[in-house]
Length: 73
Image (cartoon, rainbow, N blue to C red):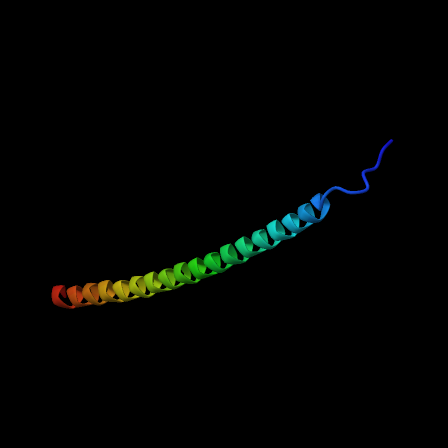
């Protein structure tokens, strides 16, 4: 069994590369999380706006139906 005493900095280089890769992955994860939160907030706002429009249309239709009943009676 032989154990190399000197590897020309290869071990340190691999450790630095692993640390760099780890930090890079953390940055990607953080960016992805930020993008997903922004998209979720946007979709939530779109959903609530659609609900408000639906409510307004429903009230409009009900008013038209009531007016029509008043004319027909």
